[in-house]
Length: 144
Image 1 (tube, rainbow, N blue to C red):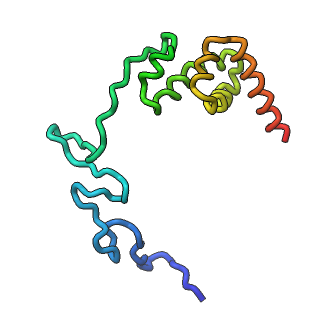
Image 2: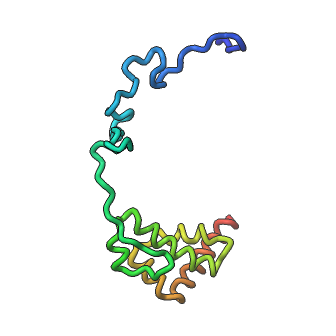
Image 3: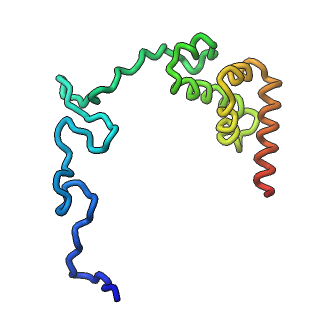
């Protein structure tokens, strides 16, 4: 029968924990990544950590969320920022139509391609139709 650990009994070292007994060579060395595939952090001349092998962030064009989002501004942004930019604009419009479910509806709409989302920003009736469709889908899920 297995023994249960009680108070006052020593615990065995946890396997797989860096620097713990029983795991030689698992300590992170300076300039070496802790996990395969991760860039190691190396102090930069100013004392700031900088990822080794990581590219400098692309120059993101200045985008004022209070201004209309154009195809040119969107195209100039890195792909990972494009959905964020569209999401901010879409959410503001969806919130006016369905305050309670604006987050869920926006998330559903962000599955559409960027060109269609840009079109929805300019076409209020198409946006209202998409919001209505999404609201009906959410009602169907709630009823199921």
